[in-house]
Length: 109
Length: 128
Image (cartoon, rainbow over the protein chains, first blue to last red):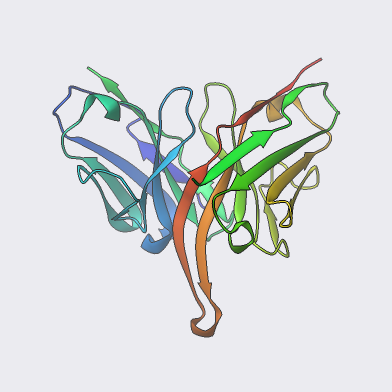
């Protein structure tokens, strides 16, 4: 069973700063099958990144994804006020077929 | 506009049953796999179940296997989740999500583009 571990649990940053979020898999994950989501309080999640590095429709280019194998990263180059939220990585394909990480909260410092 | 609208949540006693629905619009429903994802109060996202576009293949998380049944009616553009033998730990907001998966059988390749559309969620509370 693949487990996704996200770190840190909470990231305290100021607007304009760079955010680097990590997602580590317990087994190798195809980069084609790694996605990232953003969730704000009281809202449904929103797809940000698929295929480890491809931005979903309408996602600003300050969001970027990278990584392969067991280590993946979501980077927000310059935090905007609307970027403070919880971010989840997710894998598709290995048992269980779909898995989410536990999330990283990006909060205003 | 592409949209998913869940319904059917509510308060149910432990051991009881509930059926959730997810009405889809704005896309060719039968062409896409669909998932249910839940979020317990104050917790993260947990994938629950998925179904292929035709309905011929279904998948479940171990935590719900044998208790929950996913189905779809492509003539009604509606996804369902039948939940039986409910437990307190099933208390959560339940989201339906459109899976953007493209399978190319001839090339034996599957492309995954993520859960690209989500509903607003419906709340299920299991309590006596």
